[in-house]
Structures are given as C-alpha cells and as structure tokens.
Amino acid sequence: MSNSFCVSITHSKSDGDKATVGFVVANAALGSDKDTMVFLSTDGVWAAVKGEYDQIDEGAPFAPLKELVEKFVANGGKILVCSPCMKKRGITEDQLVEGASPAGGAALVEWLTNGSPCVTY
Image 1: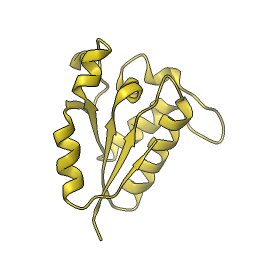
Image 2: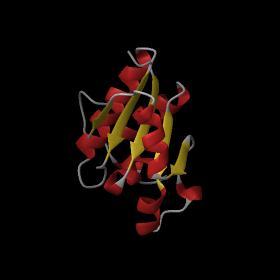
Image 3: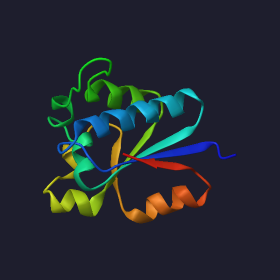
C-alpha cells in the first residue's frame, strides 16, 4: 500500500463545492499520515490564487476554502499548480498562496508513478 495520496482538483470558480470537497479529502489524507499532494489544473488553479480562494465558502458543514487550504499547507501538504493552466489564465507565481508551486504535468506523473492513488474533483 502506498504511503502517498493525490487529489486532483479541476474546478474552483466554476464549482466551489468540488474545490472544497477536494481539500476536505486532502486534509483527511494528511490526517491519515499520507504524504499528500493536491494538483490544481484547468479552473482548479484559482483555488491557489490570493484573493480568489477566499471568495469560496460553500457553507455548513464545510469550512471556507481559504481555511481548508491553509490547514492543508500548515500540516505539510503539497500544492502543485499546473503552470500552462496558470499561463492561460494570466496567473503569475507571485499571485499564488503560500505553499503552492507551479508545476507541469510531469510532476503529477512522477507522483503517480510511485504508486499513489489519485482522486479527482
């Protein structure tokens, strides 16, 4: 069994519920002592942009996305943000929240090659 876990999030502005639930699952994986990475692509890249991620609050019983992202990073989670997806949307690295890093698809492939299961939201 792999000790790592991947959550791929492809929605944020278009469906805040998917971004929120994705980070709930990512935090649960960290809580289960899994080395956890969130890969944000397409519309999901907005979940790591300052001033954007704090606008998503799906309400009870979920915490606001900002709190979920900050908890994830504070507990050692890794956030990789699709660099071509950022470029397409005019997002620069300095706009990303603390703990988020631009990366290409090869970084996701490398993570999954090590046997990590991956869920998509």
